[in-house]
Image (cartoon, rainbow, N blue to C red; front, side):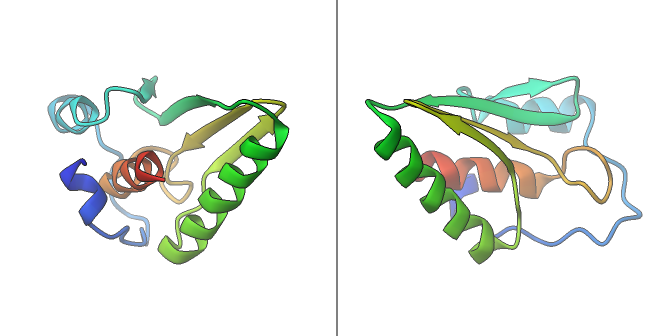
Length: 107
């Protein structure tokens, strides 16, 4: 279990720069199954046996999102779920995005 998963998401109030460079790379190394896209967002695809399992996972991610007040973009269909995470307020990545992704991995 990633240490990140033990933390809580902290709401971004804006006015902070998105993560770049070394700090971004350090956090990314802790989540090897997630792709950092253009230093802007995290993306991961999950596979499931069928639609029902994918939907159940989406619902668990939705509950986590409400609990953490951190809401990803979710796309799903038969046997697959894609999650994209970034902080809309700053149009980029914060540490909380990595915390949320680690919590998703634990689902």
